[in-house]
Length: 393
Image (cartoon, rainbow, N blue to C red):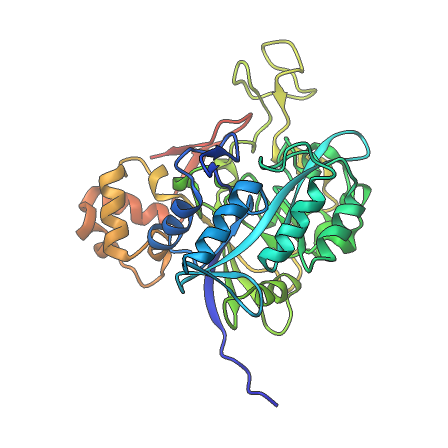
């Protein structure tokens, strides 16, 4: 019997988009500098991630660039699945797929694959149900059961993306119960999204058995790892990620890390036109329902089975953070100084870092603000209708 391998903690962000590849747009709303190589380098050297999910990896031009990185020796396919970038970062290749539900409203799903062969084969199938497989997050002319089958037959994992977001979140507007859209057994994990945390989600009984993920859904380099997961694995491989989502053999999410829900841009029900918080019946000064966006907090309250969260015993804690660049006074120069001093942005979350350590880098006043903010001593004006919450200092 082989001895048990020692376990180690890693930082993982499984949902990062690519803006351009092969000089072509991939995710239209993403930044042009969010190329595959920039993504991998920034995630490793600036953010401090150990695992990244390239969620546009199945798109035609991104697949071509992945092949080039393998040929150049920068990426290596692992026997247990996944790709290793320069011996440091595990890359999980995925695809974000849009499906229409029973009421005609759309939701996004993530399909993750163990190797490039499976990703290419899935790309070939997508060409039969999508108009343009070069672009991310495109509508697939199929249903959830078929998507699940096509993903799992290739050894993949199927994840609900930003579950509560008003636009393209399965519980944001598409359906009131996940089982109305897809068989619960087909889902390997559920991503919470920027305006929700585990205390909010665990008021809904049906989704409690899912492993919850907190991922960035990054559309730019700066937003990588604004939400991420601290995970416990034996090594870096796709097989270990599979065990992680299934919570098998001691693999687990140690900590969900993400924005305070009120910092998210869809927390509060608000009008996109006048910016006013909408009251009962979605009424605002504009006098129309058309521009009112239901907030995640109100949506979860409407769906909730419990007044208070009922956490399963294995649910990890949720750590609320504020990204460094969102802290008033932290500009590019101070940000670079902090990253250089501590090794990465995520390294600043270590409990052994003292206030004086931060102040030595950026000065007494700003260091105090950064330290207190990173320790959760912060308040916000709530976000809503596409506008992020404002940090109050």
